View 1: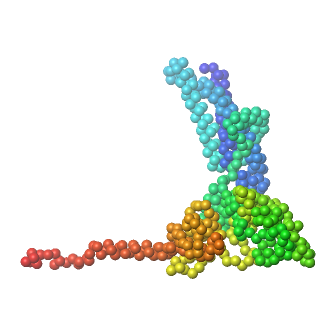
View 2: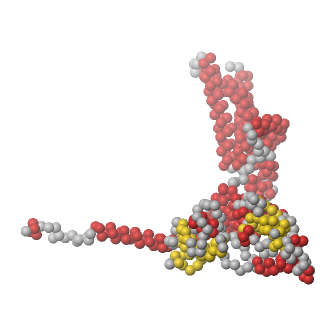
View 3: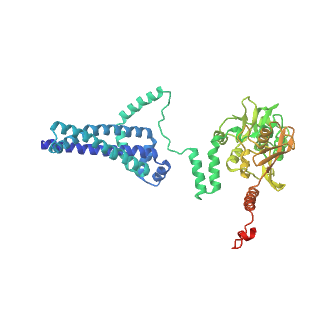
Amino acid sequence: MDPHSIAAAWLLFGIAVLLILANGVFVAAEFAFVTVDRGEVDRAAAAGDRRAAGVARALRTLSFELSGAQLGITVTSLLVGVLANPALARLLSPPLTSLGLPGSVATGVAAVVGLVMATVLQMVIGELVPKNWAISRPLQVARAVAAPQRIFSTLCRPLILLLNGIANRIVRGFGLEPAEELASARSAEELVALARHSASEGALESDTADLFVRTLGLAELTAESVMTPRIDVAALEDHATAADVLNLTRATGLSRFPVYRQSIDDVVGVVTLKDALAVRAGNRAAVRVGALASPPLLVPETLPADRLLDLLRSRQQLAVVVDEYGGTAGVATLEDIVEEMVGEVQDEHDPADLPELRPVAAVEGRSAWEAEGRCRVDVLESVGLRAPDGPYETVAGLLTDLLGRLPAEGDSAELPGWRLTALEVQRHRTELVRLERLVDPEQRDHRNHRDRNHGHRSDRAAQGPASPTSPASPASPAGER
């Protein structure tokens, strides 16, 4: 074979190897950009790492950069196929001919072997190695490949935008809206699991983990879940006076009140203690709260609690929750939402109420608690009572659901291991419920231990007393006579 032809084949093969390496860069960039932790990138960039800053810039246009990587992979793969296969076939043909194969057979075998070799090189060096490296060391790889990847994407920007536009039109044809960016953040469920695992391993304090989990769960709650129900709302009619605001504040410890006209379902404003104090003392008995009230913030029951939090922070700190029929379902405040995250908040202006759930003297040796009817059922988990799923949110609702009717004083219902008894009922409202644990964990363990011991004794009794063995023990013919 012509030496010039051999040299040309080696040159083509060398170019193919470089293209395989370039393909590996594009593959590494694609996987590294998708798997890298953005928080880690931002921290490294903030610490002065210039290459990490380049990664951060690439992540801000992630969809574009991924399209560039895919274009690079496609182009290099095609060129490798065009160059490597004939080059390897040309290089392998002389050795096969020297083995005695006919020229046409040697050429065919060389083409097949060259195709296999080029495919293996492309898959291993150009695909699998960079992919596994990028997955195991995403930040390290992203720092290494971000610059060449961004240069290629910038040079091919018009072509990438054209191809992206065509692809987006096709996606929209299926009724889908293409997302321009990919989210690398973990889901709420993953973060909850991570927080609980960190707490169990001691890397995070349990109180901090609990606060974190509660905060993540805020998005699953609604205004109805966090509101003070209508029956507990302290409100003023629009013809009440500024003096009435002061009196109601002394009685309730609250500082914001809905103002209604004729019915609590017709809330026309919100008045605050600050509004009343701004009125001269001599005029407070004459100034109507309707003139002091600001427009109310009305929200539906179904509004997510995190959006409600944004509204309360940006506007007034009390929202009137409206049901589907347009009536007032209750009110929600910033304190209500904070309590969902950190638990009950008691300040110096709140009345000295007893906690919603409190231990009481044991009943017939069984542990017992008293819970207010408005106590949320998830609070009961702190004493080991896990309520079944149902159309209720409070202890009163749980007892009503178990009974199938409105409770009367003394009515009881049972859950596995628990008895609930209505202690106080005013009109149709269950005010106080006693919770009795039917079998305490200590008693259950003691009973199980006692039952096991009793079972062992019964087994021994069934076997009969063991008689000592001795040479004279067995019966003998003399004894029989």
